[in-house]
Image (cartoon, rainbow, N blue to C red; front, side, top):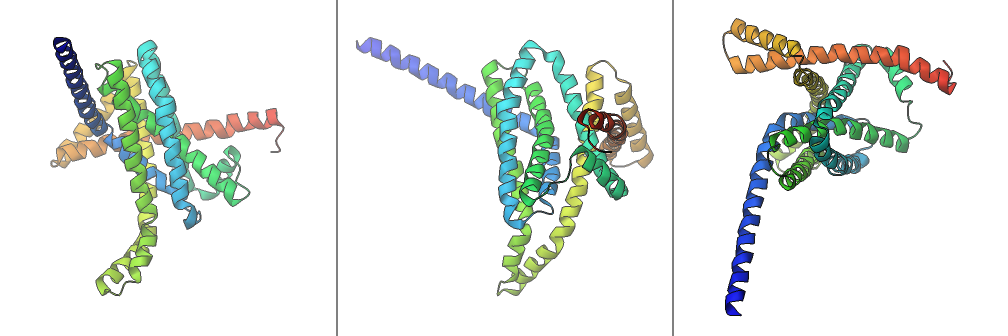
Length: 322
């Protein structure tokens, strides 16, 4: 009896050690995969604040919360099981799907650029694609839906990068790492976004302080946040173009068409040689800029296709007035 109990305890201890080793492996793989996806995470954080611009300050955090919940749903309910199933049954489908997402990001980024350069024409195009909301509630729902759609593409890229990093692990480790990365990245991104959009409110509170340096800092925060948000919106647009272009270029390479990737590499190397210093930084900047240019071209073609093909067809089918 005692011998049997000791054997049972030994088995339990062995299982506990195995579980601990598995947890350590999941933690290590999560950290490694999260680092690989860091670039897309930064893009996600830069893109999101623009969705609360122009809305009531009282609704900013609730809107961020709604987007964060949508992001978690994207990652855990849709992308995690879909990624595992596709990687097991149809891995050849993942790259084309990601490239479709890349086209959407190119379109979003090019549309924002179009809006900055030609606001009147861009407004007409945007109205054709998504009519303006009639009230504040509809506007909020429209903003949240747009943010969650964009988040879906960025989340898909994050999950794909994570899955590629743990492709040799077993099914359970892959699922655990994908879930951990999805939850941690969502909390990090939307926590930072929440701090950014409420920084001006914090500045107002600090501006009422009786301590002069604190009061001056608060006033500076209030005065500087509108400028910072404009800069962040520009960064978000650039990020969508960069990520969209990079998804397309890497996708083409995975499908066997390496010419764009080789061309971009040659441009980056030549730019680095021309500058003669900070080679790594110059190559990265040249690569990102070239990918963004490709994204602008793809986005512009998409805008033209939607404007002159999809919209007229939709009007004919739906009987909408011209």
